[in-house]
Amino acid sequence: MKSVSVVIVTYNSEAELGECLDAVQEFGQVIVVDNASTDGGVAVAASRPWVEIAANPTNRGFAAAVNQGARMSHGRHLLVLNPDAVIVSDCRALVEASERTGVAAGRLVDASGRTQEGFTVRRLPTPTALVFECLGLNRLWPSNPVNARYRCRDLDLSRPCPVEQPAGAFLMIRRDVFDKLGGFDEAFWPVWYEDVDWCKRAAEAGYTIEFVPSAKARHAGGHSVGKLDRERQRLYWYGSLLRYTGKHCSRNAFRAVAGSVFAGSLLRTASGMLNPKGDGEELTGDFKKVLKLAAASFFAGSYVCPAAAGDGTDGRRRLKSHPVDGR
Image (tube, rainbow, N blue to C red; front, side, top):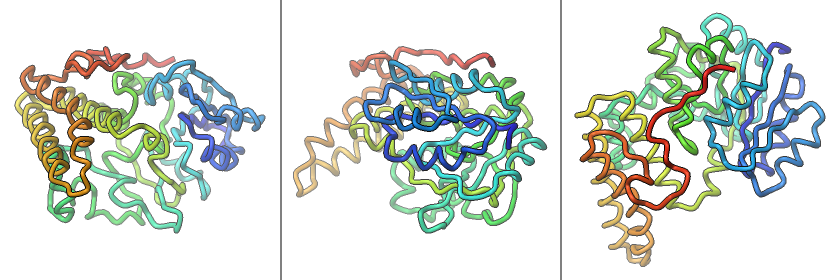
């Protein structure tokens, strides 16, 4: 495993990080890139002498931090690993698969050892799948055929197979492939869809991603984004979804997805206002910026960043994609 450089991006990950780091002690290099955490995560990393640390003064976002870690690395293989993912198996098969195909993904399991189906691997999202997601149809009717295909309900995840879009929480990438594709697209800030975008670009470049179920990591999920307030979570998630759609889909498809974001947000707002618990006002505020973002993007026919849509957020001024150029 000496050929592997592990890159772990942290944001207020103190509670999860120690166990994650202890599980990768025998890898060739372990790098923690911290995005301006306010907890003791950097101290946790510093207590492990085998860990190299880059402590950013501001939150550069997940994609930029992965690229930063990659520039610090010297291994032939990069393992992008979430701090709430603890490797619980031998990973040599994952390295071998990455050597063959350029990219390989391990299996994410929950605390009881069950595969996190619907998350550990998915197919690349089609515009229809995104419309269903934004309208809430996948939540109301999870067994619908669009959702079943998107979340790979038809795959036997106990067997190795090619997959389209594994989660970026446990992803092995041969270094030359990472460099050739220009790393992760840093325009996806601060999180979400940067791994989907990377997998899409890998497929377009002719690479196959191999799923290796024997390589397992116990994954909690959502530990960092769960620390964001609900309004920010929604704005960032819908913003990244629209950015991905604008980058990879036709203008008509983009408008269909943007329209579904607007319509779905209206439906959720109306539902909240009618909620007898009385939290409608909060829900209305939650979705106000999302509605502005979706409407501005719909009429423009392309992604409009939240600041340009008039939400007043700072630091969201990247109107174009700026992927890193290798090392």
